[in-house]
Every structure is written in C-alpha cells, then in structure tokens.
Image (cartoon, rainbow, N blue to C red; front, side, top):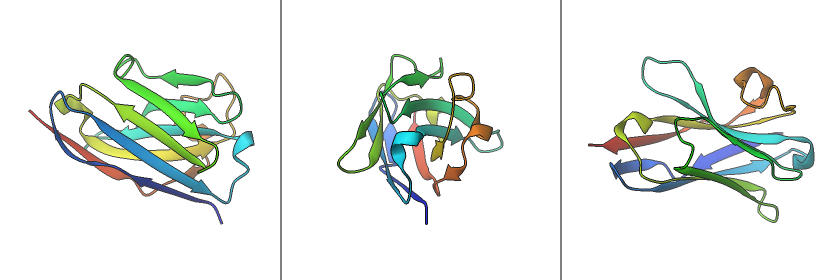
Amino acid sequence: QVQLVESGGGLVQAGGSLRLSCAASGLTLSSYSLGWFRQASGKEREFVATIRWSGGSTAFDDSVKGRATISRDNAKNTVYLQMNNLKPEDTAVYYCAAGRTILSTRRDLRAYSYWGQGTQVTVSS
C-alpha cells in the first residue's frame, strides 16, 4: 500500500521559514519523482517543486525559485521542501505526490499517481 505522509506545516510570519517533510512507503522510489504541489483556498492545485529520486534532478515554479529547496533522504525515504522568505501568497495546503514523470511532465499534476493528505501552511503578514 502506497503512503505519502506530509508534516511540517503551520503558521509562520512573513519572512519566516518552514521545512515540509513527506515520508513515502510502498513505492520503489528510484522509479519516481516526488513533487510538491499547493492549493490555496478557491484556487486550483499548482506545482511548487519536484525532485527525481534517481539522480536528484530538481525543478521549481518561478514563484518559489530562489526561496525553496527540495531534497531527499534515501535512508528515510523522505523528501523535504525548505521554504524561506515566506510570503502571505504562499498560504495554501501543500501536498506531496509521487509519479513516474518524464522531463516534459514533471510539473504536471496529472503525471502524479499518488498523493498525500496535505499539510496547511499559513503565512501571516
């Protein structure tokens, strides 16, 4: 059974930082990309960042580029999203997802088959 369990969300002031974690199980991670998406209230789910487990290739949305890093811990089967200089517009539910992506699809949520339950990030101004 595939499980993706996010943690690390919370309330933070603008300019602060958070590290989100996603623990994965039930997958052969070397065949997958692990991505982070977010969905603000009343808006569509959007791509934030992704990392290919094998090789570590990463991609970021322009809205977080320079403020976010994504990394993985092979021993813990966990992917991390470090967000710095948070802004109120970063407020959303953040979801971890796993998918067998290729270069052209890694930003597309439709390419991700498995999803976590989400963790709320709220940035106050």
